[in-house]
Image (cartoon, rainbow, N blue to C red):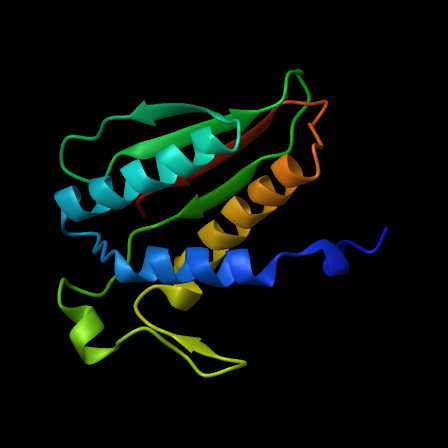
Length: 140
């Protein structure tokens, strides 16, 4: 099977835009936690069990698992950015065909969008992992 033909680009682009439009600077726990809640809901919607690790001074961490086995594939990511609140006014989200711009697009919200899109596609194709795959999302 050619998986690239199965990739739902429209879902990925929609997800990436949603992630970028939710500003989440590392220095703002509330903003990072708000985005974390959005991501947590998405992970649960795609069948993951999600554990939230509460942090006192920084954004909470998420550990999501999918599947039921002792062997696993580990996926790591983060969803905070270095841009302060208001960064979207200076560097607004924009899609210029083959390039997308905005706070956190490259580091690391596109990675989170890829994870969510892959989980979406697994659910759409009714594919279930036979091993337990953890996904660890944290603030840097």
